[in-house]
Image (cartoon, rainbow, N blue to C red; front, side, top):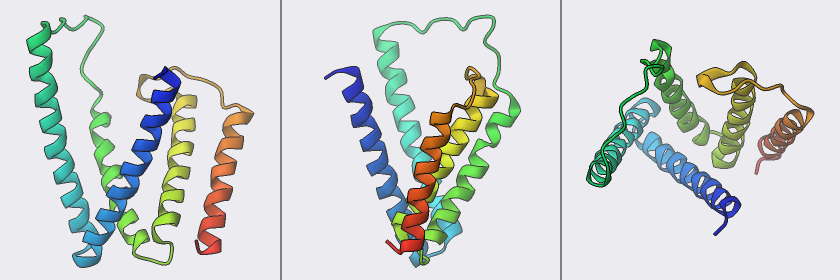
Amino acid sequence: MSGRAVDWALAIAGGVLLTLMTQANAVLAGHTGPLYASWAAHGLGAVVASVLVLALARRASATAPAPAPAESEGRAPLWYYLGGIPGALVVVLSAIAVNSELALAGTIALMLTGQILFGTLSDHLGLLHTPRRRITPMDLAVAGCVLAGSVLIVVGGA
């Protein structure tokens, strides 16, 4: 399988996983509440992340010793740790939106639009130590197409 095919497979798998997680979160929020559903989702995510880190650390230690960190590598800026706060708010808002007239399709469309716009802005500003790059007409066209599709889904009642 070529690198491009792996990229497409991972992108599709990520989209399917996002849809399933949003749907499960919405069902839980419908039975309890959006805030509890967000806590449950983040708690489960923390458990899965911990298991993955432990498994990968054990695998890495069995194969080769970890390289020493370079002198230029320092601690992450403190504001990096605030990333979970907007993430938790997105989970709460998505649970509310899925259980409203928007339903799952509208919620996913709006989330995708937000991700594209944030990614484009992050690339432009060089956030998270990514190389800065200009916003191109293609970036705007992609964001516009996704936004137009989102509007069609939300307004059309799909």
